[in-house]
Amino acid sequence: MTRWKRQRKRQKSGRGALPAALVAAALLATGCGAADTGGPAAHPGLDAFHAQECPELTASEKENGNLLTLAHDQPEDGVTLRPGGAPATVLVKLCNTTDRPLTDIALSTQLEWSDAGERDPRLKVEHRETPDGQWRTAELVVANDYQPLRGADAARDLAPGATRVVEYRFSAAEDAPSGARPLMIRAVRADEQRGGGLAGLRLSVLPSD
Image (cartoon, rainbow, N blue to C red; front, side, top):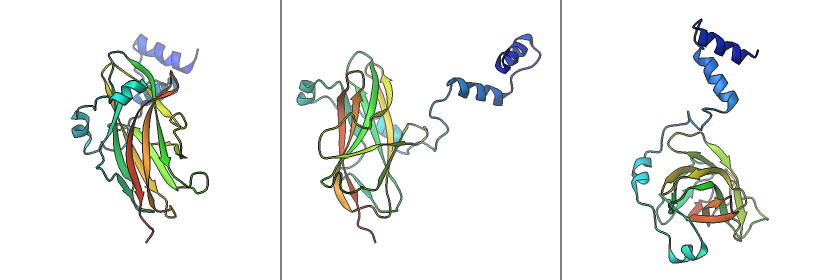
């Protein structure tokens, strides 16, 4: 009989309850309760952003077969990073515009850069599930063409009409090259291996002091 079964037998027989530490360990071992919890405090603008209405699909998005819309919380000039400085955060909302569940909706991050393949942008990208998930490193695809399926991760299902808000964190190394470039965060419909919507913004790295 395994240790877990012996503990369960003692609990049922009334000879003692499982200690909280053992319960937590067992849940982690079985994958139960292993969600992204215990992270830092929620983004201060999360509630207001979550309350905003989802954007509607444009005519071109409908023609392309998109089922999701994406929105971000940044101003028109986007995100500005200082080499070796504090990271910048971006909230991204995924919206299911259909009346059916969408499965395995992943996310990918792509930086369009004329020096792709020649220079490393020296940028770090992380994301977490709101409100308090753990930060996880995400792949930053550096390319000049449309490659939404590369680097896609963090797949989750999205119920009919539901939304999902993910927080991104961007930082630049001390030797990161300066410049402003288009950054795209895309939803990827893994079941059909195609893009499903995008949120575009400008990412700028200031010159080193």
